[in-house]
Length: 118
Image 1 (cartoon, rainbow, N blue to C red):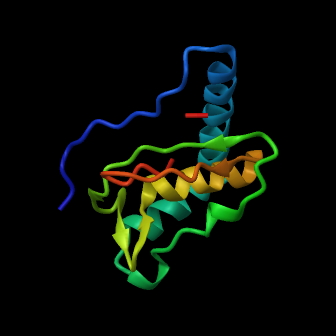
Image 2: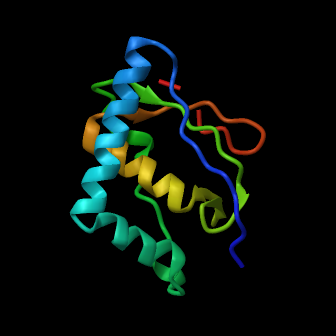
């Protein structure tokens, strides 16, 4: 059952943070326009559990730096633990963003699934 929740992406109040925010917003607009967001909806809001996986983004080249993503891992289908991996709608979008824009994933971890701000 889905419940109403508030979600946000936070970026540093620096020039670099503003540039990252702009890239992320550009990416979100792009995936809305090209149908990728609809595909992601189908994966994470659909019933086919075999599709619920996120590409392993721990080894993406970090040409533009790394992204650290703080997540709460008990909000199915947006972010949760499946087969020992942090997965979900939000994680999938961030992994795709990192791949498209040349970011790696930060390697820190901690309580509530801190994956590792750029």
